[in-house]
Image 1: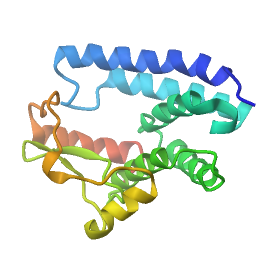
Image 2: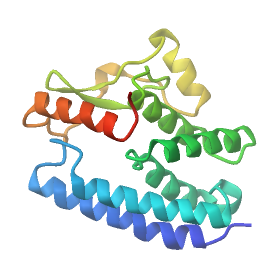
Image 3: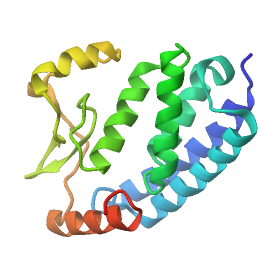
Length: 192
């Protein structure tokens, strides 16, 4: 039975996330660093989601519905400063997907996100970053089998020639951003 608590509570959290993102984007600093205001919202949202999970179980299609799952997934995707929480959620996603109770495409995105933070090649080509002034996919394992893996997760084929990020702007100082990113990865324990 689908419990509306997931949609009702998570919709407000996601709206706050999007509002904060838009405000930082308008200031022109969204791509320069992981903005402290954004990190604060992400951590608060993740903490609230964790409490909901402890009370109601992990949000899956059968208890949260498609909208509740997508809202919770977005919060999990943004919980990047809390590696243990993301990895535990990924495990729950995998188990639920194996039982047919979680969308495979969302598992693929989270799997790639965790892999890239752990400095491993991604499997499905869903994660991108600025490389030499262009938005490009982060390293991908066994590119020859990429489309086969993507298809198995309900993702369309990867067309590297048509990838475009028209509204994205590169960081003002890529070297500074990279140094800050490496320091942040260590600070939150994604890397030793």
